[in-house]
Length: 151
Image (cartoon, rainbow, N blue to C red; front, side, top):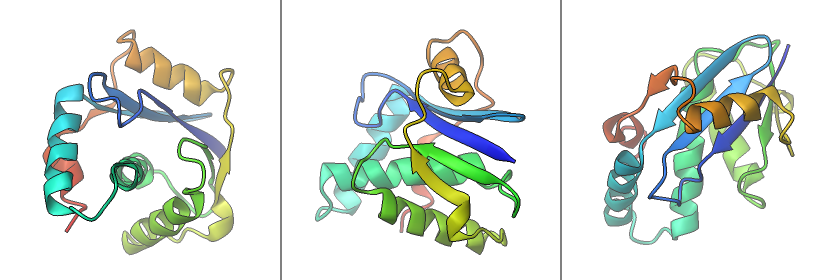
């Protein structure tokens, strides 16, 4: 089975919420408010002073992917993630596999792919619908739920 993943509201846009969603035969979305994002980014800038803002944004996106996919990834599932942070796909893929395999998922390199999902994707439709508050998110995340992934 194939699922596509898309994001609406970039992490670095701290005046807007972020929604990350996947969709195909099954759908799931997570929501992070602008307030919670500001708390997360502020905390990480203090904890990781050597990290650039882009690096922090990429790792927050990575954690959102882990939270989104951890209960749904199975060995027969192919995941196609929209290219949100070009040039960082290898880092995201490597860390995503590490996190998911720690949770006793058996995910292989070939199951995670980066593509341009496009506006006609069901994942984009779900993400933008939740982002525009036309549909409720399946899970609303707090800063604590995200920050626990950072040591």
